[in-house]
Length: 394
Image 1: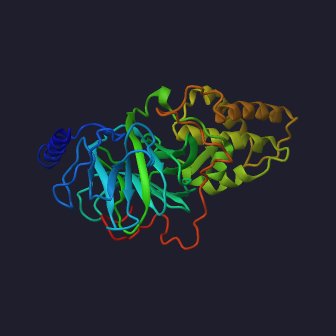
Image 2: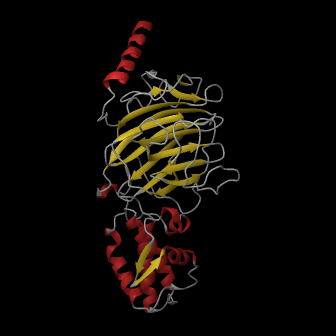
Image 3: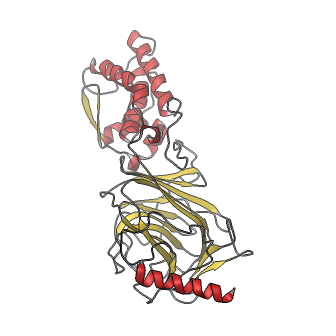
């Protein structure tokens, strides 16, 4: 048994160092649950060669563990412990991510300190040379989500228990949506053209100085076609769009025959209706148009949107128009608003959603609602972060 394990280790190390160093790589992640029981040591400490089809570790502080250490499923899980010893330790695997949209899922068991789980593109194994995919930087106080060069701070992952982290990356809408334990956590709008092809999954401390002990398990990566009608994004409520301006896919919108910039649209969304049917309609119409721009199926409300714009076009200037709900126009606006509200609440698109069970973000009460930047955080959102280690964070 011992001899066969040695032979497996040798074969995998040889394959990584010699036979698997060129691309195209195997599509998708292999051994996402670490059930081979093997982490391959790199031929050289740094940089190491491509690790297609296997997990390669930087050093022995990344190890596979069994119960009673945290294991989510199966026999093995990955534990990366940099609380003592060398400043950096991580595992990596290279693969071909394709050019479609994707769902990245993994389970994390936070311990003390900080750690990172990420997908990057075209990493040349030097400092600073990689393209952003999806990155989660975990700390006890916050989680930083970086996706396609956009950044948002999210609530921390609760410690000392297993939690599912999932991100749905929609290339059509240019939006990535993060979920924690199946609940909406946060989203970002791309600030770059989404890369594709040669990708690397990295788990652990690839920056240096994070000093954490985290466990990972059950990593998966699946592709989906965002142009498919059955896989369109689910609509989100007007309350979501009001409270998450960073997730907006557009900066301007036409209502009636007037063009409104984002600031004016937010003002309208935040304004109480107070018996004004034009505002009641505007709240739902803005949300519906944002949902369609975000990739939701427009067919259930296409006629209602045309009718709503025609109604607003009959009034001079810009909203609000102070239309009484009991007036003939007000009654029509209220009816249209009800249909659009049903659409924005997901009632007219029961088959929406991406592979992996994506659902709409609630307007309030999300367990991972974005946080205010805490005092003492040593970075500015959207700016490079300079740290010791593999590369600067995007």
